[in-house]
Image (cartoon, rainbow, N blue to C red; front, side, top):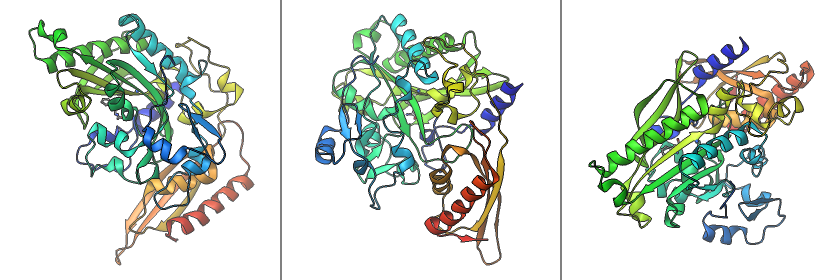
Length: 432
Ligand code: PHE
């Protein structure tokens, strides 16, 4: 029963990929969006050299690059990375073999290794700090696409971001000559707060390049050949992970693939989107010196799949170090169902204010997360009206709930007090 409820909630709240919409109309998005063999430092060497040659205090080593906190967070208008996000850099949940995300990554590796006799090169330690060029330009994301905004993406400076998808590594790996590869990593997106959205999550990217001899004897054109191969590969992957599920393909849009598809599986009475994919835009191959080839690519969100496979009801749990969570999973065990160890009561607090022109829900959520961290379960707009003078009021209901303990009234009142104060000061709205 608990599962049914949590999953229904998951479906209802699920939003789709930020890259689906060519016209950039969406503003609140998150991804569904997708060893350690040949991993190496990859991100924009010129950029890393310039900014990270001599970190003041080296606190982290990411993909072979040492990074200090003040390399990532600076008091500068071109920087919007908060402390809470810096704290996640280097956690690499996907590299822990006993963590649901690591178990899932390994299960996907297993599928590719057996189906393609170890042909896919695997990268899971590439630095998540990448250039704007790698994250957007190299994969043909239009200059005015919503995903480039400071409201949606974490910028270290005007030319450097925390990658918002693993597609950021496609072009460089192609340039380096890889023809079959999987890239797994943590990705970062500014977003709203609920049980399926968290500003850091994990994706796996897959790319396969074909040569003319691959398709020449098939009697079909290169693009159709790649599209067919892609669908076969991913249907096999879905069966490997979910067993005999019903699935369907839906046409969609991504800037980097054409045609583009989403794979949906029928799970607990609902169609659920599990990945995005398509035939790589020829322009990307051309720029990588592969004009005569054709390729496919896919991207899948690991949390989304892991929530289904392990019955995990809240995305914050992936970050929990509570033994009652971590001890439930073991290496190589994909089928284990998570048993909720507690359900502490939520506490709801409302906050109402007159918004201004620059107000966004993502900014509000960042303020709330900055104060309450993982104690905040959901921030939901419950009232919205514009008065005769044209002033717009929003009322948000904040659900506070720890997954690990009961919260005291005193503690929540203090959090809510801080939220009110910072919402007013940082977002310049007028409290009601
Ligand atoms: N990068 C896309 C996303 O994050 C997923 C994707 C990858 C789609 C590769 C197509 C090809 O939504």
